[in-house]
Length: 239
Image (cartoon, rainbow, N blue to C red; front, side):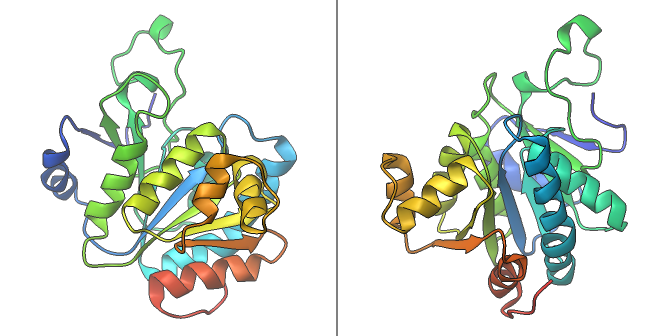
């Protein structure tokens, strides 16, 4: 179950989003959308991505005064972001977006809580319609669009499974730049390979063809931070 400190926002329609997000105390500004690996991450991958987030992504977020929007569950890159925020004593808003049927809600009885819990370091969780993983994808992008109105936003893809393709497509449809970290595994690596003409995955090839997609290497973390900083702050200072 989510921590009592996580502000829960129940959303029914897209038209309600601006008012509900504002009522929850969320202000508009730069936004980093974090998508990618959840349950499919190996322990070594998770440790490496935790290091990247803590040392090179989080400082950019803090410097930009950005809000982070992700899937909100206590797994993979979302767990890594929550842990990194807590360890750093950071104050940026961390907003999870999850389909209501995939995470427990306050009052759920134990036998019904076989779902993935909300990552407890998140400041807000937007519960959106749906019962299946992936139902939240369009909503996640829309939450980011509402919060970044009049401000820059960027999507960061680390690792990822099948749902990550959908998440990235929604960001591209919204006109949001996508930074793909090559070497982080699975979906990110397939898109990176397609960008270099060596992937047979049609979804990856379609995504890699977008001018909004930038591929950066995991083994050059300062390039990751500089690329994110360029979008969110207009500078290329490394984190």
